[in-house]
Length: 90
Image (cartoon, rainbow, N blue to C red; front, side, top):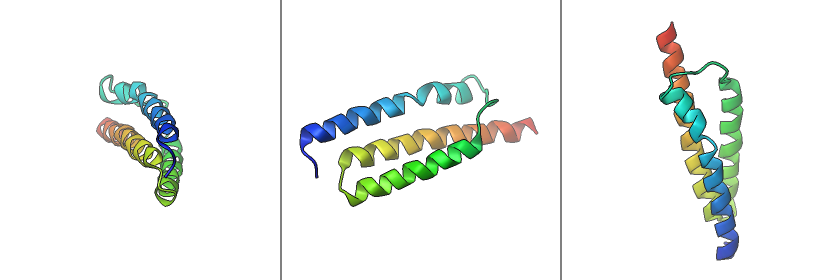
């Protein structure tokens, strides 16, 4: 495991990465808008984050594990919201 100060840099970066998704989550869940959201792109991002999570587990980096689990949760919130809205549009 990396030194604590190195892991804390990773945790700060992870928190900022999660905060970046909040406007998208709000747009989908609060404002009920899904136009312009590409599920294909979100699928690729999900795969990439899952691979980063596996990498973080393999190198025993708690900051990578936490950041990627939380970011995946945010991504899934958007995907689920968009799928819900699109199914109710039909």
